[in-house]
Image (cartoon, rainbow, N blue to C red; front, side):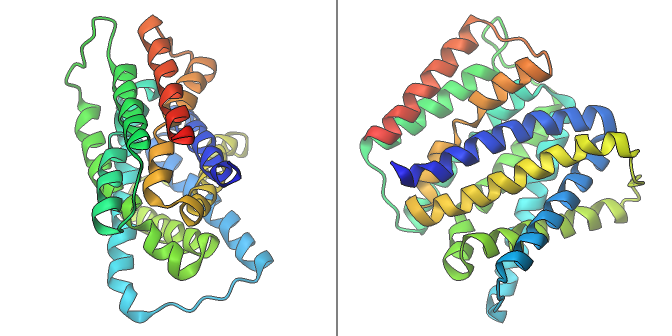
Length: 280
């Protein structure tokens, strides 16, 4: 069971990062929220590289794929932030987890990984439960603006999280995290600069709102990549479907986004799905 600790750490960190990101978007605006979150993230990762004395040997033939990978990661992140800007995190977070099913399929097809029947069933239960979390009180999911951007995020993240394993194998978990997240940060900053977004430094007392998601993404991404090295990309993605449990609780506690009885039932089903993944 110890091999599951990084994946659980990733679920908790990523889950709360969505909640703190929504808070940052509300206070700082979407553009500053994502840019400064990634600035904090890169600073922390760079400090880790210096402390760990990591040595980088980057194969030149990998560079085109690296550019495409970080492009998918950056577009997926920016689209997710835009979806959160228009919708509630207790809705956008669970719907966004649809990408997990594509990662599972991609990992099995392209990476040759395997899951037991119980783990596949547990993953499906978790994703379906996540969709229940997104329904309104009448059991409907009304077409809204955030859905378009979340669809883009799902497509990009499906590719990004499927092929992270390639970089983990070549560079190791920490250096892979540094390379990928730094590339995503550079892409994000460049995009907002070209589009002349206001990126002026927020007041010091408000920087904590941008720093919080950056710190949580730092922890979550490291845990996620270590989990890939221990249990593979498919199983790590399957467990990550539990993130909406944390987001729903955090959204209720920190953002006052209320849950009804159906949503509590969905959370219980997600926990059941997690148990199936661990046991089977």
